[in-house]
Structure formats: structure tokens, C-alpha cells
Length: 235
Image (cartoon, rainbow, N blue to C red; front, top):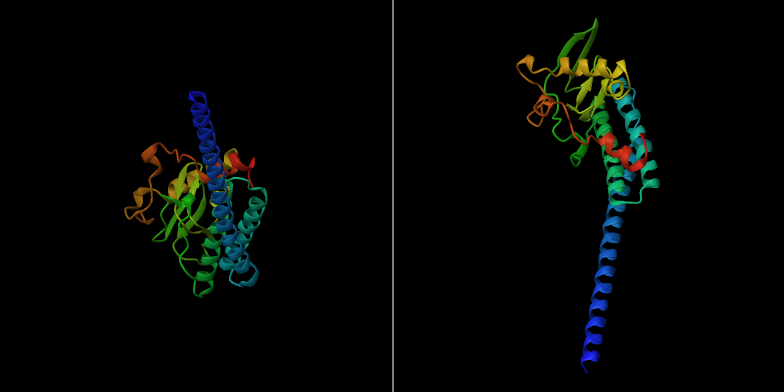
């Protein structure tokens, strides 16, 4: 009798473990399916905007070109994604593209559309609230909250080499230079430091901005690093 009861207890325990494992697998699959659907939804929305919008304005045209790059990146990530985190990164790329689309629509003078979910990579970067000008090594640079002939390059905000860079319009795509190598990195960061220096009095980049000097300039886990870890390189 005791042997029978012991066997019964063991069988019940095994059944509970199997049921728990099946439930865990089902939950993980649901999370994966939800992440895939969410990324796909924003990717398709971006695709519709990229394919249907055309602009003559240089700033809007550049923003749409950047949106197209993010669309291609998101598509590649979706094809490779196998984990929830990788689908989240693909979603982030699609949202970045939609941020560029929104900027292009503003430059074109049309309704920018509904607000987008906040970009994870732009957390703490803030946004420019006034125009800024600076000369570095004989070159003149400008940045501001609105597009114009002197500021045709939009950036949705983020961290470049660990430094928070506010969303706004810039005279040159400094973030691409600063993500390069060698002297380009140093030059790009010098320009960012000059443009975003607190010495201007009115900081001009919103309340959400996190001063890089507060943590020694270490942005910690910038988006580029996450992509490199999950997809094996830049995109």
C-alpha cells in the first residue's frame, strides 16, 4: 500500500512538472508571437509611409531617405529575429523610421500624424528647444528644433559614443561621423560637446536631457551595442 501511494505521489509530481513546463513553453511562445506581431505592425506602417510619401524639400527628402534606411534595417532584423529581444530591436528600428517620417511631414508642412511610442534609445536625450550655432576647427555648425536650409538633417535623439544627443535638426549628420572610427569619432564628439555645452545658459534641449558628464560620459548600453550583440554586427 505504501509503495502504491509513493508511486501515486511521484506520478502526480511528474504530471505537475510536465504541465508547468508546457505552460511555460506556451507563455514564451505567446510572448514571442506578440513581440513579432508588434514589430511587424510598426514595420508595415513604416513601409506604407515610405512608399507613399515624396518630397521636394531637401530636409524632408533627407528625412525620408533616413526613414527608408530604417525600413530596410527593420526588415532585415525581422527576417533574422528569433527571440523577443530581437523582435523588440526590430520594432525600435521601425519606430525610428517613423520618427524620421514624422519629421519629414513636419518639414513638408503637413499633419505629422499621431504621436509615436517613445524610442528606447532616445531615453534621456531630450530635444532641442532653440537654435544653436558653434564654430569648431574653422567649421561652422548649427542645430535647432525646426528644419531649415542650414539644418536639413534630422536626428530622433539617442546616445552616440555614450553621449546623449537631443532630437532635432542639424547642419550635418554628426552622429554618423561619431559612430565611425579614429579621428572622426573625436571630431564628432568635439562638435557635440561644443553644440550642447551648458555654457549657453539656456540649455536648449528640454527637461528630459541627461548630461553625459553626470555619469562620466558612459551612456551604458546604447542601442548600437544591443544590435551588435543580438545580430552579430552593425546594420
